[in-house]
Length: 575
Image (tube, rainbow, N blue to C red):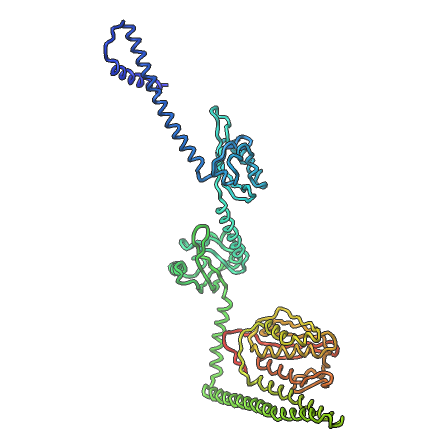
């Protein structure tokens, strides 16, 4: 009231000054009339001045309303005004855009219909809380757009009273936080994976703050190894368990932080005072907003003890043996010479077999050609016996040609250049099945195989080996052939098995079937020269493996072959 009185006095003073300026001439009237006229003039000026102030205030108000309108409608967040029942009274452009609904279509609709069903009850309690406490509150909800797509929203709700302090309306500010939620969910999944790896790992793992050396996290394996419970271990520093002095520990820590070094061999002290040798790999990882050291620890105490024992034993052995180096070197040289001579002899023998077989083919081809020519020209002039004799001779020549070809192949097993490499044995079987496609179709054979390992071998010879065994399994069969290939790992080798349902082999013959040109059946029963298994034996021997058969007559056969597993990076020198 005092302020209003002061303002009125100021206004009257301004009005009187204005009247004096405008009406400074003397009016010949009575004193009362003069005073009344003066009052009227002052009042008129006051009204004019008030009217001007009101007009200026109206202009400012309209300008302020325009600014408010622009700020409200073009704000980056959605603004909603709701009544007590949650009905939308007003919404800005951003709010309508968030829901994908025309602004006019939102008025007088229930806001809850744009909330995901599983969040509606949550929103109801949120409004009740704001209404009861008359304070602002925030909540994160899933909202539904017109196209039924869901997005995450952060909502800040304001309680707005009327002039009497009673409820007037709710005002909501809504922000789309879908990207933030996606990031939070990805971070949560990452943290869950980390926790699972960290806490369920049987390897000892701890997190260390590189600034103060505090142990800030440890998995159960670490608690078990060091002998401390979780709470106790998290109150310790790494310097409490590392036997190095503090300066050395800080130096190693700095090298890890600067990525100069990450692998260490330390001695750690357990809760019972035992000192253990540990192998540690450390690196920086983000954890709760800062970089910490993650240390993966392996107990190598037993390994270190074994190394010391081995060193002592080696020293004693060297003292006891007192090896004569010169004699040993001479023996090695002599053995090397013998091996070289044996290799030369084997190559000469292989070359002899190859050349002999090759030289036999030409005269044999000539004999066969002339016999067939004789048969074509004089078949009508010869009696039946003569024709039969010629047929016998031709068939014999063909069998001899097959034997020579097989002998050549047998000699090539030793002389052919062999390239050993890692190969997929499943690919070998697939190649063999392609090569034997006609035989498989003719006999309606069923060939199956399990998942087979990668082996270190000669690809060419493995195709030859598997083709011999699978072909035999199909051939020596008096019903629909069923062949299955499998493999298992045993110690330092893979053992392959080729199992069939064929005619089987008497156990008395299982050893001699791998002898060259050895046959168990007549040519009328089954064709062939009897060299395939001999070639298979030679191939597997060159791979430092073994081959053997398990069989009973009429119960099928299983041919097993072992191939060593290559365990280091050195090239295997196969003899």
